[in-house]
Length: 222
Image 1: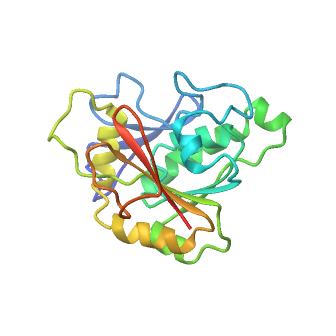
Image 2: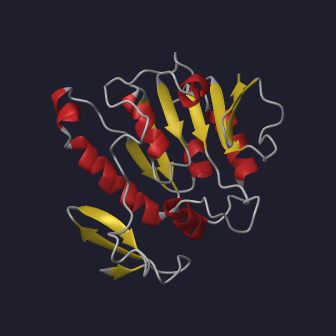
């Protein structure tokens, strides 16, 4: 079990449990810890390719083929897009989250439905997405951004443990404007920004916007 270095809080630990890499703190030691969940979330399709019907699919564009998720985090949106049949490249700046994502993708590559279809699991690039996007060797159809915005309230009883931990590790993305600029330069067709419903549009007025219950997808099209 290895203790995580600064700037991550010293109460977090990475360790292998039950065949996968997990992130633990004092509160989750007895609960098993957190890992990148590779199974569909409640309400998501288990079939492959999954139907492109939800707001995420509409925002990234059903005709898109290549997508870069520049703010992968716990990789749940990336995995949902992968199950829809998109070609995914993922970026993550936190070495801790990159290790967890890499473990999740390794487990995904061993799933029968992935092996039997000879599917290529998402590619993971570790590092600052602004720099990675600047040196991207191809122009993806869509670049997807889900940056950390300052919370509307200091604390929320509804916030999930995984999101609280992610905020502790990453903090707010104060360079999100520069990230959007890099994404706009690198994309071939569109940039999609996922944001909380209270946040101002990151790239100015979008051409399209899709409102969910607590979040919004702003679409910028070249």
